[in-house]
Length: 269
View: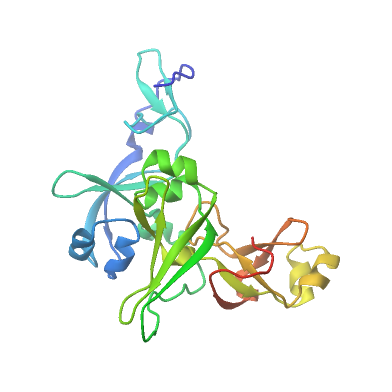
């Protein structure tokens, strides 16, 4: 355990950050499997109401450190308190194992976390099985934790480029898997696949803050962007594309035309 500095003792109000709530889980078991829940557990819970524990978004010094915490503060009584953490959602299965869930599944006051535009369907109409290898950048450490990626691996892989395997099968939802350095294969949400989008006309780009000379070059072009809906690393209503110099520019999702998913040769974000 690392000792950083002493923390002021939190108030009783601060200690109420851990709360219990019942949420409705997605009805599609494949979505639960994309959070790396075992298939039998995902099937049993799909569409059900599930009691969960919420650790609400908070400032430093106000939540007791958990066993997985690596950075924390120690108060004069020797008690450990966490650094700032975003909302986290947990539940225990019948065997007592703790599982995390994506925070945008909570709903209610967190509906704003849901992407405002339709997301890709998990079903693909194919006649035979296809296995594709694609590249993408993984989202933040917290987003990887939400799909039950082990903490150490999430810390090492967050924000990094990687290769994933995309499996398309007749009558089955698309399945995207990531083989980590541990040689263990994890499922990731199919909506995290890189997207190929056609940028809007010049005026729309400049309205969003893209310099006129850049907008003139990229207006109407198809570019490849990384996008992880519901994550902490992506904007809710905007993509970000790179120009040839590597500068990143925002563009409204509603102004773009979605061409497809996967790799593309043009300037990746």
